[in-house]
Image 1 (cartoon, protein in one colour):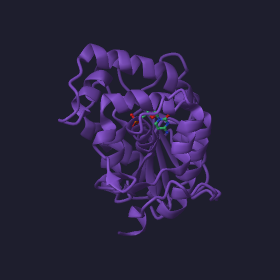
Image 2: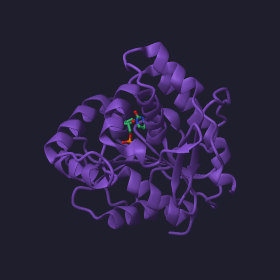
Image 3: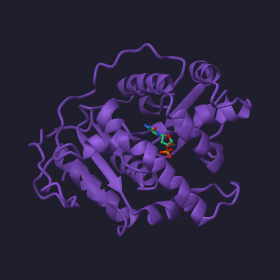
Length: 277
Ligand code: DC
């Protein structure tokens, strides 16, 4: 296991963040951007070129089903850097709370689970392996039941505070990584080198979530998934919406793009900053 694949102990919460790198470096030049209709187009700051990919933080945020997970994993593979799947951390807390039969409205009990759980995250880039209490739950945490519970868990601020501290602590050991979630470019790594937002239509996102369900998961209809996606949008959007401000991030609508086409565009943006583009 190399440094970028180091295990992550969820009980380590007191490590301060020294910031792996500084400076937002989004680049307006030659960027194929999907402009938002009413913001007057992108106004992006001048890039600060990187001579090396040794220390680089790339964030990918946006709504559920925008393609973030698949794109983040493939981008990190192409760049041969780690992939920090922050949604998996929220899912792990939800999974353990459900497994213990906890009432999710019992905040004290749920916060205790988050504080005391033995969570380890192998950050790939090829695979993300999530272990909870020594068991591999990488697939189990993707079920719709866990997804629904995770929406509740992700709304509990003390749990967010713990997981954000752990994500920043993890950043120090990973050095270069692609981090994916809802709040990565806005809250967790505001000084990230490259910030992306991936969007797509609700229908496309619901279909993608269905396709991503593990084979053993309880079957779900497209309508159920669409309802779930919309419910999550209402809750999650406030975390990544600050990144829609002109110049804050590079935004792609992935509705009509293949995964490979999206990864190509993101990789191109990143390589421009390391001088390999
Ligand atoms: O990306 P995902 O579907 O695995 O995320 C699972 C849930 O966790 C979803 O409800 C959004 C939430 N989440 C969050 O609030 N902040 C993050 N950084 C990552 C995920």
